[in-house]
Length: 202
Length: 246
Image (tube, rainbow over all chains, first blue to last red; front, side):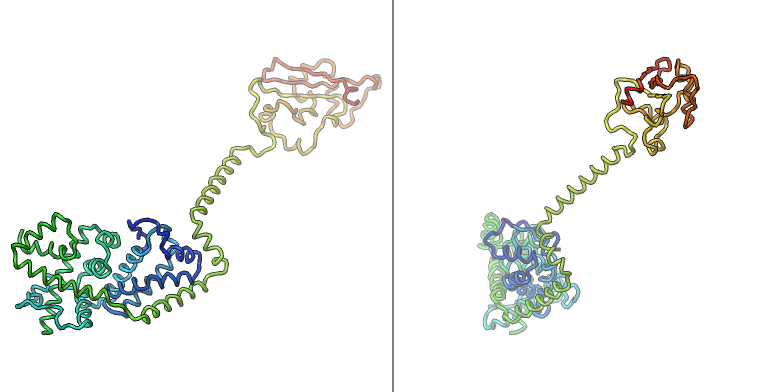
């Protein structure tokens, strides 16, 4: 949780405008806290949306992330890099939201293959052919929701947020080897899921 | 190593997540395996769709909605705090190490103070400094034939004076009641007295009767006896009364 969110990220961020806002927010300046939200709302809300797959849930999660940030602001040590810390809070909040709602059931790769849904398409199909952008995003969002929780977090941070494997490992509190394994598994499952969706559509 | 194992590596190779040695291994396998080449091609297409999602931007209203709700709650919480906390919290949160250090110093000072109070005797009859060890404790005895009130200290000091054990520690100031006590009370002292011993009992009376044949001009000397722990050693000090009156 927030208490142990000391990431092995690096150096003090003198050039980071967030650091100045954080100092003022710690002193009780509400407008400074609002500036922190403005600077990082994209990171929190979009990550929550990828992890939860629903905008309303993501907004609830983002609100919870910033309120937790406000509550535990004094525990954030000066000199720590802020975005990885915020990513970690976001992942934790979305995990809690996901467990509370239990809207989507996750399937393992073996389950999908055994059910017949994940067989290789008979012909090599161009996945992107004649797909609208909205359809593509919808399919990917659906594929992400089918992934196990930890794999989804790993692949969202690595492939969508574009963080390095080391940064993802720091945020999730696991090793780089574990993250690579989770990312590899997630990519293969998403590939199979998207192929199935394309086949069904065609 | 079969193709299924290579697929796990290819899923990492497609995004550059393999170290150079493993990447070379995968590349050499891909050159000789058409199935794995097809897998790589499909995985790359799938990853391209995932990256499309990364490029998606949300409606600004979605961000504003969240920010407004958060700030409403933040302002509500700040308003609910007492006024003194609004002024005190910045100091408490920003100077936390300073406060912890100050508290630690206070605890140490309090401990030292308590230790000193416990160590230091409270009563007025105990000596402040270290006891004199060069000489054995001496008990001072004083007897006077003439006005005892001259030597009598304050009454409250007499009443609070402890027993002889504490008195033995005094080597400077004679115990007040010992000065007014007649020598007759102390049997040893009485036997050591020579000429004034007969008249010592008169001190018990408020107004000692004077014999008719005794002339009042030569007042008897004041006798101060210092009794040591050794019963065989008694120090007698004779003080001229006239000198004291003057």
